[in-house]
Length: 293
Image (cartoon, rainbow, N blue to C red; front, side):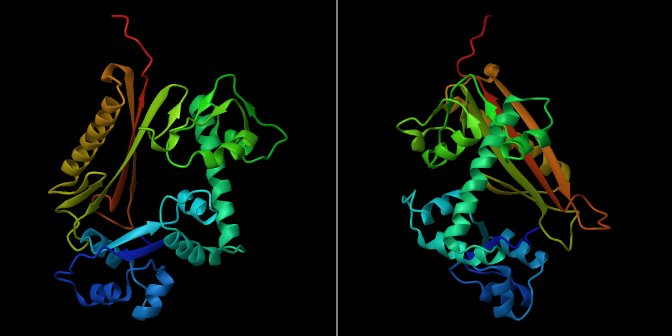
């Protein structure tokens, strides 16, 4: 479902084909700069439903976008690789939901991201430990913090910006390699490579929810006839992406573990296959692990 206050929408530039009256009005209200739902409603004189938004997204006419931690770093002047204008527009829109200005909002996002990194790191290490307890320690509910006896290497994107805050949450030897920003990894934890793939399944048409399903993956959009076919395809493509990534990192299939998680969402009284299914494939590779056979 695409009704979220923190989400904005922008046109993709593709020419519209076979739109109904409501889709046309919503599309006309959306321009080349990100707009919130309230702004779209103001221009189209009605609040757009999730059905219309989903339809326009599936037809590749609009794209939902969100404010990312990298956007926050753009505003703070800590990362200048891309144009900062889009980040400022997003912060201006979303800061209205808080009591902060754009700068304060960006600082809050950076703080949240640092806590998220720390939580994911400790949850990965402390398998079997209650996640709520880990979260409370990370968020400073207790006069205590975690201490690690092994180094942490941060790889990918502008990770250097989070090193100082992370070191305040976790007592560890934290390293940011010279070329961390271009590291070929989604993340690295103690010599382990991790690849996370998200895939979504939705009906092609809400009016005919039992025939034809769309699978949205990093490789693009794929259409299948039945829900089970879409589900099997989504899992297979997730494994394929993970395997290809680990192969590029020099990790063999024998030194890799793959985990699946699946969540489904449907409106109340929905009597069909799930309205939306989210599949997450997580691959964990061990480049240094040697086979004894």
